[in-house]
Length: 160
Image 1 (cartoon, one colour):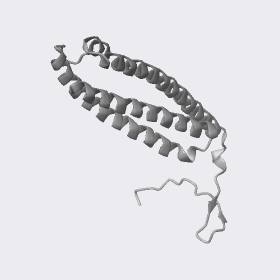
Image 2 (cartoon, rainbow, N blue to C red; image 1 turned 180 degrees about the vertical axis):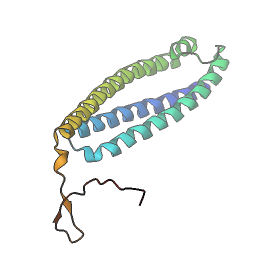
Image 3 (cartoon, rainbow, N blue to C red; image 1 turned 45 degrees about the vertical axis):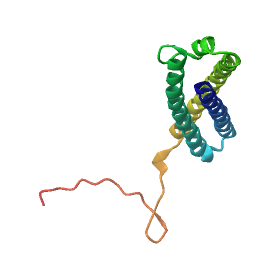
C-alpha cells in the first residue's frame, strides 16, 4: 500500500532532520569552543546529511505523487491534504509527521542562524587581529639559517 511507503519515507526524513539538528549542534560546539581545527569536518558532516535529506525528499515526492493518484488528489499534495484524504489511522500519523516536521524545521532554522552569527563573529575577530599585526617587521633568513636583511625592491634597467 502506498500509505505505508509514504509513512516509511517520512520516518526516514524525520530521522535525517534530527541527525541534521545534531550535526548543527556539533558544529556550534566546535565554534563556541574555539577549536576551529574540527570546523571543516563538522561542516562537511552537515553537508553530507543535507545530501541524504535531498535524496529522501526526491523519494518522498515520487511516493506522494503515487499516493495522491491512489487517493484521487492532484499531483504534489501537502501532508495536510494527504491526511484529510487518508483513512484512519493513517490520517493521524500523517498529521503527526507534519507537526514533527514543523518543529524540526524551526529548530534547524534557529540553530543555523546561531551558527551563522558565530561564524560571522569569528571572521570579524580574525580580521581585527590580522589588521592589528605589524607586518612590516618581517624577519628573513639566509640559506644557512642566519638572520638576513629583507630583500629590497630594485629597479632593473632593461636597456642594458
